Image (cartoon, rainbow, N blue to C red; front, side, top):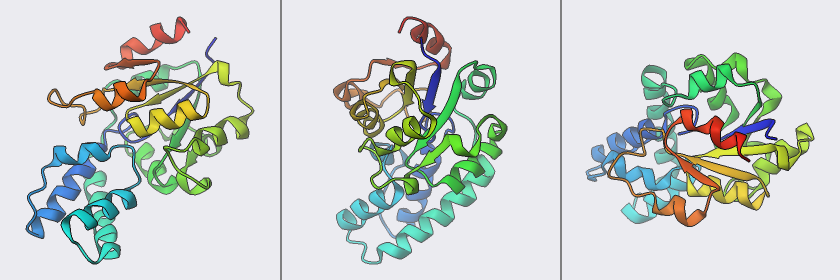
Length: 219
């Protein structure tokens, strides 16, 4: 019986991947690069610094530090205005009878800001939130999920992870935890292929929070 749910944050609880894509698109267009928001979705699940490093190399942007700091500033401004919960996430979490946790490649300070913005901060205790700066290696390494298990002495057989990216699915599987891939976030638009998720081989791929409880009941 599943008693514990570990949620990824970006794209699973908050619909932020589209906003990060908007930030990158805005910044790069000012530098003369035609960068569509939807192109960013291939980086979903990665740390922002990794995306900046890749794009700096690809687009010959020399000052990576400025690129990174500017993206954080633009993203923070967009988040403060436009951040919303992923469709179905708010209702699911506030009504959940499971123990809920967060395991994310995002910074804890940013997670807390996001949770407060969408009205979910009171449903997650501070020690139930594990972010990348709390472990040696971020996703796709299993460290974040193993940290949640270790800190709270959870039984892996009673735990499920909810992810939205192949990076996160890989991390959960390496940690030995069943993982469901959720495509309810806006970054999973109709034109986007689920090939990467399929290749990473989650236990199940669903597109609506309403389907989650029935799957969990059958685990």
